[in-house]
Figure 1 (cartoon, rainbow, N blue to C red):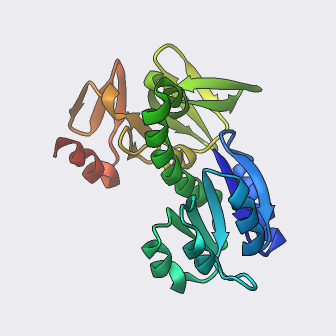
Figure 2: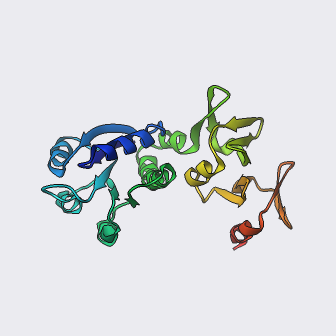
Amino acid sequence: MTYLIIDDEPLAHEVIEEFCSMLPHLQLEKNCYNAMEAMQFLNKNTVDFIFLDINMPKLKGLDFLKTLTNPPKTIITTAYKEHALEGFELNVVDYLLKPFSFHRLVKAINKVSEGQHTKTAIKEGTNSEDIATRFFVKGDKKHHQINLSDLLYIEAYGNYTKLYLTDEMIVSHEKISHYESTLDASNFLRVHKSFIVSIDKIKFIEGNRILINEHKIPIGQTYKSRVNTLFN
């Protein structure tokens, strides 16, 4: 997905670029330091979404957004939370309050992705399938391509995680919180502080455990209510 950063603070550009560089499916098209520069670019080019600061000189971010007849998906980035309501009235995808974490940015991008995958699926069919169902995991000095349909469950392993697939186990350099924030919540559920399971791989649930193939996964006391939603 292509994106644009519109912010008058160079440091904000650096933070967003650094975070987005960790997500291989994103491509930065341009850095704009005021709304007029962004307007000129968007008159001749298109992007999938924009990061937009609110408080900028000459033309404020939300006023700029109102001038666009067909605006890209928009993630607002600002240090001022009082503008949140107006931002949502303009149908922005998400509202990031500075300073924000990597995981919070990923959640915002996932919201963009959900809409993007739906549109792409209508236009391009199977191409979007690959984007939506596969991702790469760094582990063992390699980047392993994971098909989500093969992923059974994830187990915390200190500062790492173990990804259990149908025919192998891969140790990932990411924490379990990373996968909780990036995986689709309708397909994957955290059931314990150390476990996330693939919902459609559950064989049965009995007492405080879940059976997936021959693997027995415990259900944490504080996560029971989440598991119970599967029955409703």
